[in-house]
Length: 182
Image 1 (cartoon, helix red, strand yellow):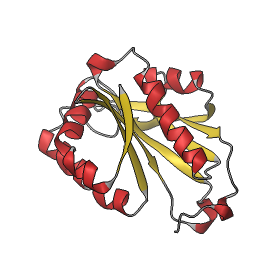
Image 2: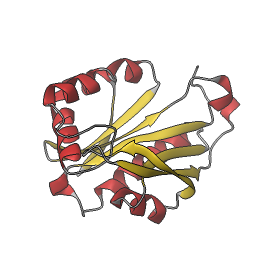
Image 3: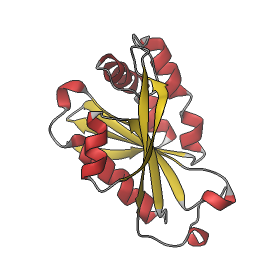
């Protein structure tokens, strides 16, 4: 398995594969912001809308491949406000259902954390459905729960579920030393 960061051109080149991953993730019951069944064209359109953010440096996206097959992804959303350059939000950690249980989620998470630290980001945050398998991954990787909000988001079936907010402190240069503009 390989994990690599996408630029805008490579993201464009794998829109179909990313859409397949997103539809599989939603069909498998993961709460990643969509209701089931997720139309494949809507999944392609959602990923297409991310291209400009990747090109502008507001979103970093990694993919995992098993040979030629795309089987996972994770992103970091980078805020543009001057007072928040030290932090980023971990978004859309997804692993194809038939690739789970092999440590891929952990590898994607580690890749994003290392890249964030190398860019001088000192704080990451995320939200995830309370009680989900993803929550066990984050806790196991040293993320700290900040609190749970009841009925925060609907799961793919449309049922309101609680969401837990997490954060993780990273090492790195102070925010003023980073080259990212914003």
